[in-house]
Length: 339
Ligand SMILES: NC(=O)c1ccc[n+]([C@@H]2O[C@H](COP(=O)([O-])OP(=O)(O)OC[C@H]3O[C@@H](n4cnc5c(N)ncnc54)[C@H](OP(=O)(O)O)[C@@H]3O)[C@@H](O)[C@H]2O)c1
Image 1 (cartoon, rainbow, N blue to C red):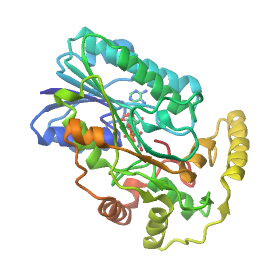
Image 2 (cartoon, rainbow, N blue to C red; image 1 turned 60 degrees about the horizontal axis):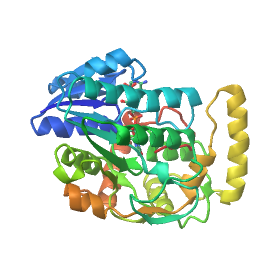
Image 3 (tube, helix red, strand yellow; image 1 turned 90 degrees about the horizontal axis):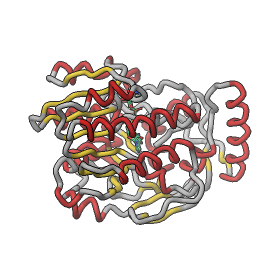
Image 4 (spheres, protein in one colour; image 1 turned 135 degrees about the vertical axis):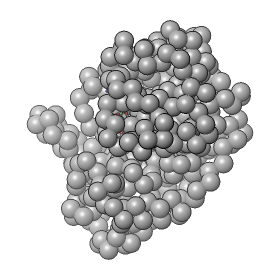
């Protein structure tokens, strides 16, 4: 098939493109910076440089595609509200318009479980969980508005995939940001350290996305994707820190205090334009239990996570140790993963 991957230059999009190429599909990548994906271009993927805010360019990029994966997004934990809206909501509207204009058969929208995060502990959430009255970040809100547009789109098959907390070699967001913060001596243990989360090894998510390409039962549905394992987040973080020879003696901060401090940092950041060390959203993400039920993805997509968290962590660690530069985050020392 002819497949367009927006965000094909990013972490998840590049793994997805690799999996699609391996299956013999013709893959086009929409993005702005193609330096990280030269290996995909060498394998036959085609680069379509475009900004998601450029309606005409995005619509044109959809021409000839059988399936479009929309993974492109502003997914940093901090940024201008207007940019989140223009890229995540406006960009999604442009992708839908492109699919409709060029009779694309199926659109797979990569959303996020953050759209149902309340900021409190949440156990075994299923897809039917309603959206909260207040979103925990502008990122989460704009991903939800993107879901609304996809759910309302007519004339094409749509599938929404919400992968939780991606990790793996090449990631610059989640674990490497925590490691970087720890290296800088700026990683506190927020909360009681016993909160459970479901992580997602990036290749497992790419598998789920490839399954969503033509799974007949998936049309019109939303699926959470995780590794299907509940792990204690801080156990994983400590394992990484220990393996890297970093101190695990972290300063403990109750979540309530972290939220107050992060709120003040956000106010300062709004005035200075500089990303805060910590956001309230990230503090809650690091301290709260968030586990999910992935029965629907197993049943309708035939999804089965191949790589365990333990194996995924070992691979991530090996990549961090082998070549720190390939996985080193862009914002050194900031404990602010998104997703
Ligand atoms: N990482 C997670 O834990 C997580 C969890 C849940 C959901 N997700 C979702 O998964 C998707 C991929 O995330 P990721 O972790 O792979 O993020 P990433 O590595 O930051 O990739 C983001 C992608 O979006 C593209 N992009 C951003 N702004 C753009 C713009 N204005 N115009 C064109 N392209 C733009 C980037 O392209 P350039 O770099 O070329 O500009 C990049 O390819 C996102 O939709 C995100 O919301 C991620």
